[in-house]
Amino acid sequence: MTSEAERRSRRRIYTDLGFERYAGTRADQLSGGTLAKLNLGLALLADPEVLLLDEPYAGFDFDTYLRFWDLVGERRRTGRSVLIISHFVSDRERFDRIVELRDGRAVPR
Image (cartoon, rainbow, N blue to C red; front, side):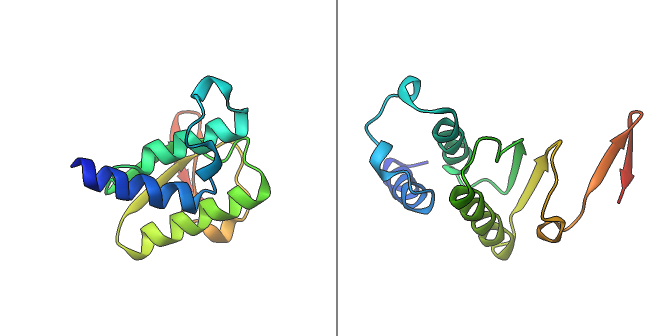
């Protein structure tokens, strides 16, 4: 990424995740939920075609959880993919497809 593209992406992510007030805070000073927001923001920074997230909403407050799904929807509309690995699947209608792992095998639901 160019420096300018990184700055634009960072500003957008700060706004999208409500992270502006933490922009100058060191990561080791953040709460668990805010650190989870930071990790999501870092994953989104380069705007990858495929985003692989492991337990991405663990620790999110409800507002951030809803913002997360807005971001996923935006990525879907632009032709990008998000693969979520989670032990907790709620709001099943938000997923295009759910695959369960049972005994080492992928089982579509």
